[in-house]
Amino acid sequence: MGVIRRHGSFVLQVNPILCDGFGHCAELAPDLVHLDEWGYPIISPDPLPLADVGAYESARYAERGCPRQALHVAKVHEGGAGTPAPRAGDGPVSRSPRPL
Amino acid sequence: MIEARSLPRLFAGAGTRPATLAEHEVTFQPAAARRALLEELEASGLVGRGGAGFPTVRKVQLIKAQRGHKYVVVNAMEGEPAAHKDHRLLSTNPHLVLDGAEMLAQMVGASRIAVCVARDNPTVVNHVERAIHERERRNLRGPAIDLHTPPWRYVAGEESALVHWLDDNESLPQYRPTKPHVLRIGRGAALVDNAETCANVGLIGRYGADWFRALGTAQHPGSTVVSVTGAVTRPSVLEVNLGTPVATILATAGADPDPQAVLLGGFGGAWLRGEDLATPYCNEALATLGLSVGAGIIAVVPRTACGVAEAHRVVRWMAHESARQCGPCAFGLPALADDLAQVLRGGPDAVAAVARLRERCGVIEGRGACRHPDGVVRFVRSSLEVFRRDVDDHLRGAVCAGARSTQHYLTVPALEHEEDLVWE
Ligand code: SF4
Ligand code: SF4
Image 1 (cartoon, rainbow over the protein chains, first blue to last red):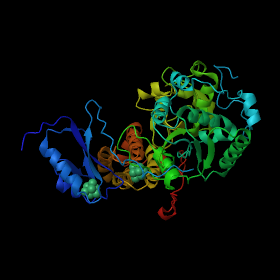
Image 2 (spheres, protein in one colour):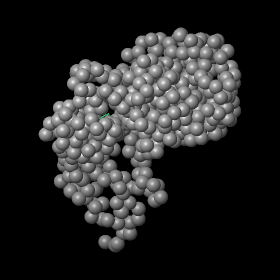
Image 3 (cartoon, rainbow over the protein chains, first blue to last red):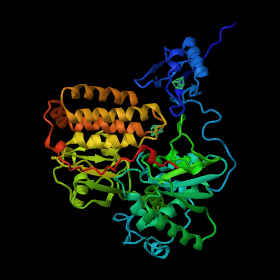
Image 4 (cartoon, rainbow over the protein chains, first blue to last red):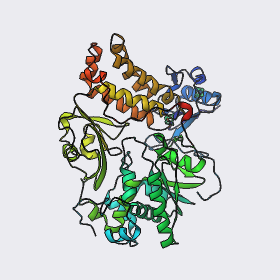
């Protein structure tokens, strides 16, 4: 395996509407996720460097392990001032245009 | 034509019933199609009047850049129980709001306009219905205007909840991880603007940016509508020049001249101390105190009232109005209300309750899908700060007279049973 140089940074985001608060993610990524007194995850909104492979891997691990698929690892654009990249499928399900 | 430096602007020619289209066109001349609408809007520096205080032109440009069908959504939901401005506007000059909505639709290229009024207010619904009908007969070209009546809930007027309702009949806020986020109805991008913002656009489109900027301050131009409630002899909806001292507005409504504090911006807002009433009413000046105009509410609380009791009633109701989608909001806000109840009762547990309140505020902030919990956190923090004397009294066990009386000053609706809450 060659050395992959990673630039940029990432944030682990939780969709609070989907999250049901069983706290699985705190076990999968204990260094990134803390739980509040009701069992819901508290995740720092500050981006972490992608070069921090350990943190990135555990973020991906939590993302895959979340039973509600509420977690998402978002890449932060260079110079994007903390704005995560948009991803396909955001927003409500697309439907054909229709009258209101 | 209305004089640039005179008030009323938005309420010009307002009578006791809504102006008909003909009367409306006598008061404000007919809306001529200005070609450089977007440039005028940009030059006017209009900021949204719904609460967030976001520059309207930036939203318009964002939606304009989207492809496909577009919608303009006029938000007259008025989720704040103390607010009456949008309803007053729609019951006096509904066509000004609709003019503005049509101009916004022209700017972004929208084919449909959705006017949203809570169904709990049938009078306003009727007024809007009639106004839309009048226009239908007049011009068949241009975007189609429909009236929509979602149920009244505090968060139903939140823009993503409103769009969710139009899209899928549920007044629940949506998760928006990216900023800025384009809300969509079906596939079509939706531009959501407050009714008062639309009315201001209606004026800018007619008279231009220079005319608009003749009132207000450099950063926050124009006039705005405020609902003054609480300890006032004449609870009223007033149109004021932005930058007018808060004390002057209060005097017009016949408020208690020496109040303990006034709540600015509604239940998701914060308190202005009675000592700071000389502050100009505009975001520029209020921002230095960590406040904002918000949804245009001023609620007066006199010195005899207990700040803790008032805050507790508000927070309990706000916790009840959570859409219960997100854990930190569904569990955190009732926890805040319980802590405040503990402080209200006083005694030895109250000291721990205050510490817990501060800690929980930090935990909850920013973790909901919408800004509802953040508004409550701001309100709680500001209450602890501004009513520190009342809080200290309660901590010492000397529960004040205000807490024992049944007289309250903030209008908080009665709590409904959880099963009775209607979201669709
Ligand atoms: S694993 Fe997913 S659903 Fe469970 S608490 Fe974490 S984010 Fe929420
Ligand atoms: S933060 Fe509260 S009000 Fe907003 S979507 Fe979540 S549960 Fe609903």
